[in-house]
Length: 204
Ligand SMILES: NC(=O)c1ccc[n+]([C@@H]2O[C@H](COP(=O)([O-])OP(=O)(O)OC[C@H]3O[C@@H](n4cnc5c(N)ncnc54)[C@H](OP(=O)(O)O)[C@@H]3O)[C@@H](O)[C@H]2O)c1
Image (cartoon, protein in one colour):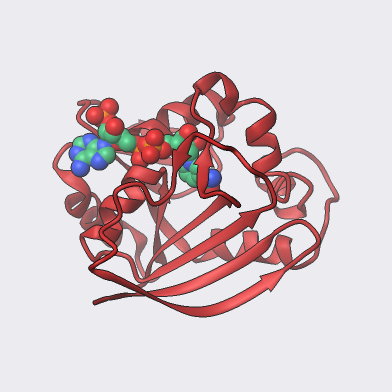
């Protein structure tokens, strides 16, 4: 069982624009431009037949198929609650780390959001149990990923580096404890749209 992060990052280190208004807007579209034309993305969101089938598509599919459960922060959930269709695109249990108390929220298609109030380690333990023999994805956003990194809970980090500059926004590595974390590069691949960087995460 592996705990992994897989996110899209701007060349200057951001995973989301600063304002919620921009989240559905141009910056988000440009950041994620490598995802939207892919066959897997279209299939998973029932957007219709067709789509690209190259390495970008395979990577999206492999990431989805290895994931038995996800952990995410409340701000990612809040953004997604507005953006995801009724059939949310996870199709597994999702554990939302939050101070808010809320009953589990079951969506059609197999996604159930569970709200966890006792921190990332508790959320991750529940995700490990729920994932069976598949892996656990720390889905985002930046704050939640950094909490897991700093606690030494992440095994693998995958970044799709998107050729776009944000200038400001939600920084992926804000507050990371660099003294405790070492990265070993395990794979680099690129398509015409994006560069895929993979690292094993080690404790120093
Ligand atoms: N580019 C990508 O691939 C990608 C991937 C995922 C997400 N995103 C984006 O990232 C953005 C959100 O990132 P973010 O860094 O702002 O926020 P986040 O990590 O999604 O959420 C942070 C919030 O989660 C709750 N939380 C986190 N740790 C907690 C703990 N230990 N105990 C209790 N509550 C805890 C707190 O909310 P409360 O106190 O309100 O409960 C906290 O304010 C979104 O815009 C999303 O779209 C981008």
